[in-house]
Image (cartoon, rainbow, N blue to C red; front, side, top):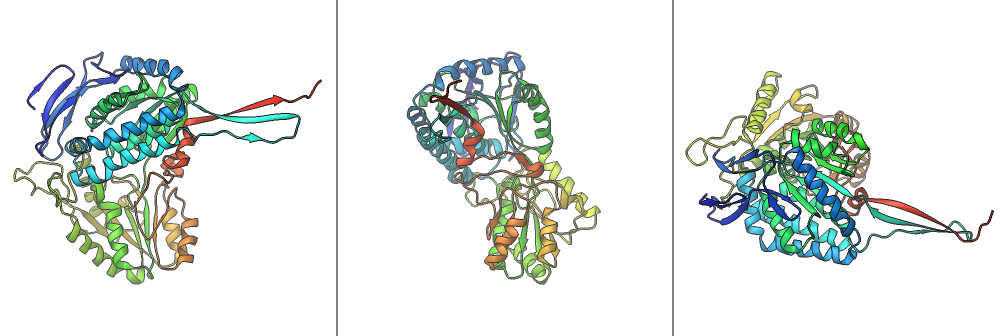
Length: 504
């Protein structure tokens, strides 16, 4: 940190990149101070040092952002759809142009490896914005033939002001998932970033302005969930709320949103199963299972954290999974190219993961790998690093089998038959992701049909794509994001009935 003014600060990241970090609330295309003077401090999870502080929105600031979005909606919805899409394509180009800075901020603020931030997360931001920018002028109603006496048609209309609350595990990517369809459909947005990772969204805001979006169309704020998040969820001027985060918080948002029956999309928790049958390619299954839980420090809502393996290949699979950890899970400085796993995002998350280790041991599961804080990064013993952790001999009654850990933490249990495997997979309150490994294509389709989840990967895990719908069932959420299905949450179908001659 070298110098600052009231609404920005000049920073030098650990990789040497220098940039100007905005610190205000982005409302009506301007960075402004919070009305309360409250701030949020961003902590580098790699060494526990402060990066900088940013303004935290109060309920009054949320009112101002919603008012700006409401005013902008009147004109934004009337802009030629092709022009709306053009602005989104320009924003995607700017994301590409500033990719290295965006990736640097994401890694510094969040702890994920820089190579992942750059080649996966930021690339997905640009791809998602382009995908939905292309849809902006392809949202059509339909004519419905009811006979010659009536001309009936539908119009796809935007909802209005959309509140969006994003999580800390994929800050920029989750922002793009929500902004893309909302803007393409003609809505305006007030988006709140997670208080744990407040920085990258503010730099992204400068690109929104540079792309030429009119004032008030995109408003990006930081703030505490219990203050700014609650104010958005309960705000009578908000027409829709989209949230990604914990199931517990999702319930609170549903209660708050009921004040004016807001349209709602929720993507919440998961404890996703990965089934390995004895006819599977075990080497590939182990490698994919490793990716499915250990990537992004295990901080993935769809992480396949419950691995269920058929008895005949259980021991062999466990050995292969251990080898995958040894060969791939390099824990270290996220700015180093060789690093696969960086720190957990916060001290609270770090302690939560270690708490589940103690729970697993106390319940009688076998700690096969890891289970401790990793203190060999940087020489100072600082940072929220956890060894990749594997428990075997796990039973369905155990806490570590049933609850979402959200860390580099996997449990491996066994099953005898396909029927038992499906029963174990579905024995959960969650239903987000799942994976099936078998070389029997008939079995693969049958199991995929019977698993209670919004998504099933066959012979892979967590290779999501912004062109394919994403979402869960049961307590893993409501609605879908991504793909063409993601547009449905941001429009209403208005029916128009034209009397072609019926007289009374």
